[in-house]
Each structure stands twice: as C-alpha cells, then as structure tokens.
Length: 321
Ligand SMILES: Cc1ncc(C[n+]2csc(CCOP(=O)(O)OP(=O)(O)O)c2C)c(N)n1
Ligand SMILES: [Mg+2]
Image (tube, rainbow, N blue to C red; front, top):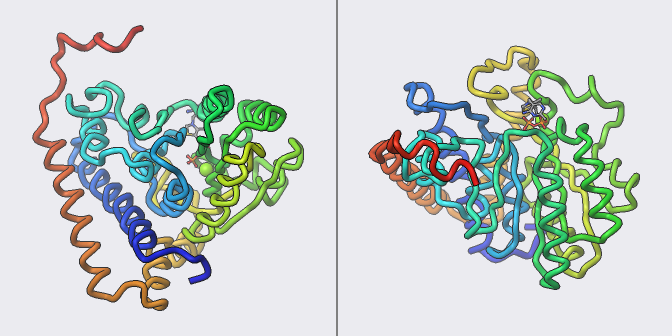
C-alpha cells in the first residue's frame, strides 16, 4: 500500500464505499417498485470521491453537496435510515419527508446540505469557510460539485473569493464526463478542469477519481494546507456515473465501449483487489464486511418503508421561516 494507513482506516474506507453502493442499489430497487415519490440522482460509480475526501475530515468539519448527494451524506456520517426515509417521503426522514433526495442535510455531522440548484453549493462552502476563518478554528469545508457546475458563475466567484481571503475550502470537482446528456468536451476546450485553479492563484490537481487512495492523498494535502490557514485547493476527480443522469434517463447518449471501460475501472472492485493483494483483508473478511453492510442497508430500507408519511395537516410547518 503506497499510503501508510492502518488496517482500521482502510477497512473503514472500504465499508463506506460499499455502504454507498449498496444504498444506491436499494434506492434504485425501491424506485423500480414505484416507492420513490420524487426524483433521484444516483452516485454509484463515484463513491471513491466522497469517501477519499471525507476520510480526511473530522466530524466538526463541513461539506456541501449537490443534487447527487446520497454518497456525500453517507461518507460524512449521516444516517442511512434517515436518508432513505427522506427519499421515500417519510416522516422519519431528515426533512420529515418534505424535501426528498435533493434536500438532505445533517448539521450534527457537518453536512450542510444537498441542493437542486447546480453550482449553489460553491458559495455556501465559501461562506462556511469565511465563518471558520472568523471563528479562528482549524476546521475546513469540502465542497463537492460537478463538471457542469464548474461552468456556472458561482464556481468562479466562490473560488476567487476563497482564494483572496485564503479560506479553508477544498473544492472537489466530480468530473463524470457528462452534465445531463452533454459531454464535457462539447462545453469546455480544456482537458483538465483543475487547470482553472491557476486563474485564481491557487493549487489545482487532477486525480483518478476511481482510485480512493489517490483521492485520499490529494485531499489530505489540501486539508492540511487549509488547516494551516494556507487557503483553498481545487481537486478534480475524474470519474463516471454508472447509471443515467436521473431516474428517467436511460443514458443512450453514452457509447457502450465507454461505459464498459469505466465499469472495468469500478472504484470498489479496484480497492477490494488492492486490499486482498496487499493482504490487508482476506476473502473471508471481505465477505463479512459485505454481509454487514447488506444487513445495515436492509435495515435502513425496512425502517423507511415502515415509517409513516407526514401528516397532511403539517404540510406547511417548517417550510417557511
Ligand atoms: C442552475 C441550474 N441549472 C440547470 C439545472 C438542471 N440540471 C440539473 S443537474 C444538471 C447537470 C449537472 O451536471 P454536473 O454539474 O456535471 O453534475 P452531475 O449531474 O454530472 O453529477 C443540470 C443542467 C439546475 N438544476 N440548476
Ligand atoms: Mg457531470
């Protein structure tokens, strides 16, 4: 193993990767049974990004998320059963069933919120960074966003402001090749989104987003820099979503060979192989982790399915402030 990480840490990362994948598979299964009232954007295939970054964060650090947020929530320590309940529109969900998949937040673990508005997490992360700086703590905030979002004005404004004020923000671009059905190369001429960091005078690095240890290492440097008060970093993680953009998208715009190539680079398969090759885990231990995670997600789904829907009389409660 290139990185000097203890067995507990590595197994914890493997478990999180798997938790996200199995959670998303369960969401898809429930959606197919018509049990999901709103839309969903699945994170399967991109797990190494959320896990590689969040494994460097403390509970009192922050993250902001996107419309594709289930994986970010789980990686930062939010409870899968309450995320699942929210997705199913149940009273026990994070927003009492009124927000759905794209509005999940859990301030108790520093998860500041998913958002349906592409690029909206960037200025929120910048603001959180400013609050950390003014409070003089050594916390950091990691901001997840897509390749599409990096063409929004918020990307440029938030990064520039974080740069000039040297805020403790780690900007994490999840470049999954597409923004809905639009290929990245149709909407930007540069190869690496990370190169945009130069325009703001900060460090930028592009990494294999399907290699959890590569993401971990890049995030570790960025987090250390931010904690020392040396300002933001832009990390571009090259990755791919296994499913279509959202629940109704069969993703016919993607060439079959491209999908197959990325499936071969599956982040979980790769990490599992590495853990076995380096004798961190045996086949039996791997199977045990998988069994535990399957049971945990089954339990989460059961909890969500058995929970009641919110009372219609409370429809407007907690909605307006
Ligand atoms: C401001 C805004 N513009 C457009 C949309 C519609 N929309 C939803 S997701 C999406 C694509 C986002 O692509 P990317 O940032 O690459 O994230 P990905 O879905 O690939 O994770 C678009 C255009 C929106 N929700 N908000
Ligand atoms: Mg994208």
